[in-house]
Length: 175
Image 1 (cartoon, helix red, strand yellow):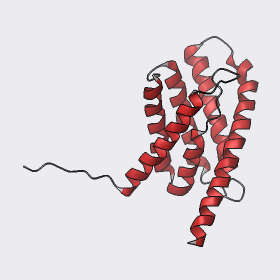
Image 2: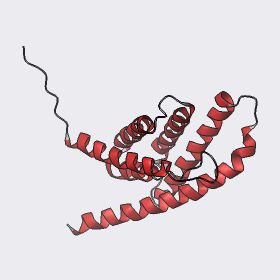
Image 3: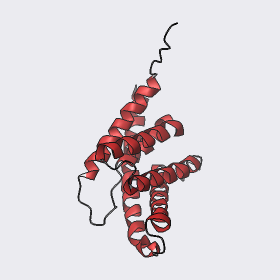
Image 4: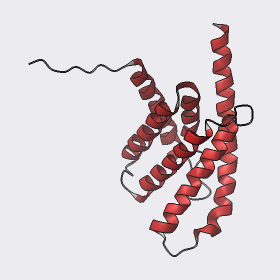
């Protein structure tokens, strides 16, 4: 009887590399102080946007889920409320991106996708907080501060992703 050998594909290597990059950004971000607890720039989401643009939704889902799982294990937050919040935000962002990627490109580019994902992320997190972590507490009072953070970071991450995507497209067109 012979053993079944599974060899990683080029796509597997690409997903692992992009997930490692996203995890590194997540770990660096975790070391940064934040003015409002729970508000982070979401730099790893830039990687998700780039993967979505270059390799499609399937690869973006893999990269995001690997980042959330591995990042939480490395930070010691696996299966904690912080992990659940991160996972819910990731699922909501991916759900919105899966729909929004089909919107007309001239009107909905990286910045729009990033903003939509950022608002979905924070919306899911506030929903989890309101329904599970703090039931009975009106978390809508927190919405303006978190919406402002989602707008600022969604915009800045989208601009960075748009710049990087433009640069990679320019590099590809000259070869």
